[in-house]
Image 1 (cartoon, one colour):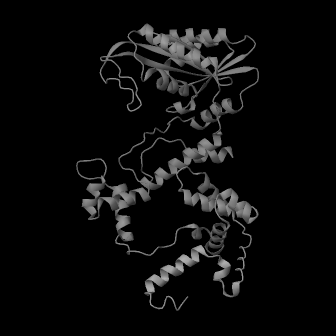
Image 2 (cartoon, helix red, strand yellow):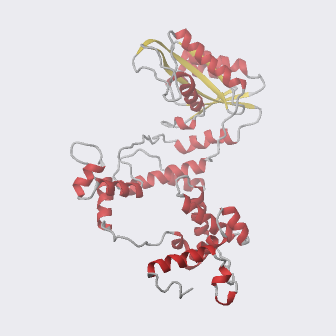
Image 3 (cartoon, helix red, strand yellow):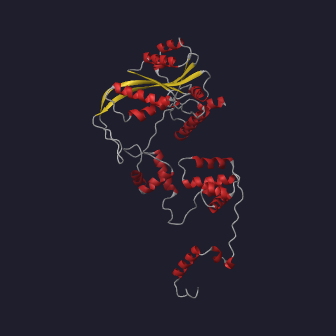
Length: 415
C-alpha cells in the first residue's frame, strides 16, 4: 500500500488514512490484529453533603444549562453505586462519556464538571473590564435615565454592545426589568404568618376554613370597536379604547378544604355589605361547624358594626394576614383566575352583564372545585423573608430605611 501511495501528496495520504480508520474494523488497525483492551472504569466516589446539595440544586434548577444538568446527573447516579451501563442508560449518554465525567470529578471535584479552556483567539476582555461593567450596572445610572442600556454602557466603557450583553447574560443582569415588593411593617408579622399558614396546613377539626377578600371596582367595559377574532396567524385584537358602564364589587370566600367558592356582588363595599356576606356564609355552613375566616386588615373587617355582629355569632373566628401580605390569602388566586379567564378579554355592555359573567365563572368553578395545596411551612416563609432582608442590608448597609420586624430574633426565640 505504501508503494502505491509513494507518489501521492502527504495531504491525500492523511485523508486516505482517516477514511481507513473510519471504515475498517478496529481489530485490523491494531498491531497484530488483536482487539483493543477495554479501558477500566473509574472507582466509586463519595460526595460530601455540600457537593450532594449543590449537584441536586443544579439538576432541579429550571435555568441550569442542559450540559451542566447532564454532568451533575451522571455524578449523582454514579455516587449511588449504579453500574456504568445503568448510569449511561438513565443519563442518555454513552458509557465512555460516563467514565470521562466521573474521572474528571474524581480528579478536580466540582471544578472538573466545568468546561476546560479551549483553543482559539485569546481573550480581549479582561477581568477588570468585566468587573467594571458589573459595577457600573449595579451601582450607577446614566444621566437622563434610570438604568443602563447596552449601547449606553458600551459607549461608557469602550466595549462593544455585544460584549456588554454577554456580560449581563453571564451575571443574569437585566437592568430593563423591575419587580415590585413591599415588606410588611406589621409588628405581629411572625405570629400572623404562623397563624394563617397553620390554618392551611393543619386546619381545626369540625370547622370550615374560608379565605375571604373583596375584588373592588370591577369595571363593565365595552370596546369602542369590534373585537377582531383570533386567527391562526393573529392573536385576538380588542381595541385599547373602551366605554365604562359602571362598576361592581365582588365579595368572595374560598373554602380551603374543598376549593368551593362562595361569591356575591354588591354595588359598594361597606360594613353593611360585608355583614350581609357573612350571613350568606353562615347559611351555607352546617350549624354544628365552626367557621374560621382568613382575611386582610380592611376597615370593614374591623368596624364597630362588624364586631357587634360577630359578637352575636361566636362560631365565627377571624385570622388576619399581616399588612402588605395579600400573598398569604388563597382567595387571591381565584381573583387572578377570574381576571385571566373572564375579565381581561371580556366585553360587558352593562353592570348586569358583568355580574352575570362573574356568576357564571363561579358556577363553572364550583362544578369541579379543586383546593389549592399549600406547601410552604411558616418557618420556610420566615427564613426566606429574613434571608431577603439580610441580603438587602448587606448590599445597602445598616442605614437602609426599612420597617421590617426583627425576623431573625423572632426565629431564634421560636426555635
